[in-house]
Image (cartoon, rainbow, N blue to C red; front, side):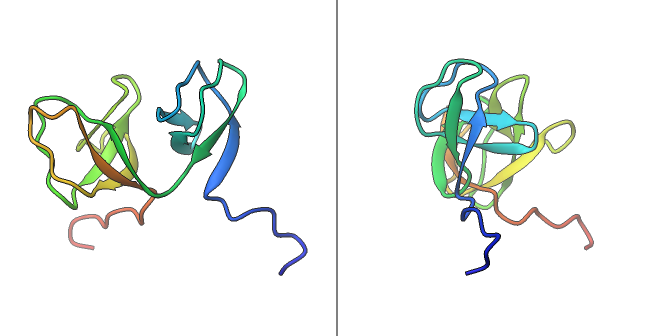
Length: 116
C-alpha cells in the first residue's frame, strides 16, 4: 500500500454546518453525504459519501428510476433541476408526485450532457 494512503473515502468526518440528525443529507462545501449520527452545529460528524439512501424529494415531482437528481440547498430536498443545484445522485427507485422520499445512489459518475 502506498505510504501516503489516508483512507478509502467512503466515510469522511466534517464539521456540521448546522445541527444534524442521523440520516440527514448534509452538504459542506463540495462534500455531501448522509450523517451517520446526530451532531450539533460546529461539531464533528461522519458522513457516508456513497451507497443507496432513502432521502427527501420535492413534492409534486415524479422521479423515474435512473433519473439524475440534484440537491436543492434552499429547499433541503432533491429534484431534477440542474440549474443552481448540486448533482448528487441517481434515483434507484421511481417515486410518484405524492411521495416525499425516494432511494438515491450517492456520488455516481455525473450524467453526460445531451449530445455528448
